[in-house]
Image (cartoon, rainbow, N blue to C red; front, side, top):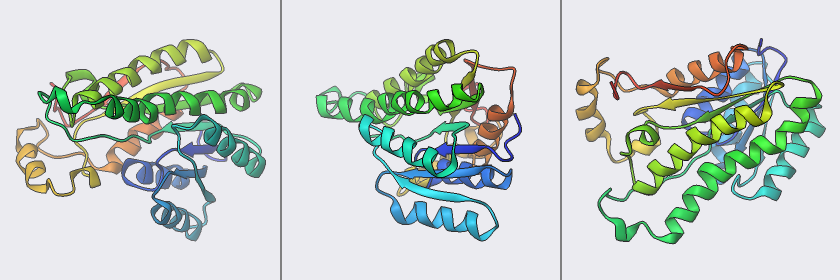
Length: 246
């Protein structure tokens, strides 16, 4: 699938991996809907960069954990551009809790992480599916995490939520075939604002990776775009982590 002239929705598209993906989709000729929940200025800045370079993008606010807000966002995008061809389910949240601190993994934490990280991805995939099926083509990429493979991460509920994203990918691939492809890109450590205040920890980690470098958001965006383009692949979980999990 060529990305030129396609319309893509990137959730959490104003910062980090989402911003890098939004910019790269625009570089490849796609129209981009930059979704945000709270980071309005970042989303609008991303849109401005794209439009200033001759691309086409708009920012739409929606909390992906709210099904009705997702439906409204998708309807707004389709009314504006006539279709949606691509979905990058990138929006995620976490809570930093030591893995062995089970008492702090409260019901509220579990609910918040699963509402955004898992249910939110499902809501978005469900909302865009009718429009993709109408054109008999579509491609979704869910952004997972090596935490979902290793069981380690910023918190136990976060790791479990990302494991659920990997499972959701396979189930959606079955449910939406053959018109819509669904795959998952699984980053390791990435130099985003999630590391704010932990820069020294990131520097200590880098030499222990096989490639001795922390991935950049653009590294992840390149793989996301490649997966969106690949028409012979669905239901796959693809890791990009500088050798972190080998």
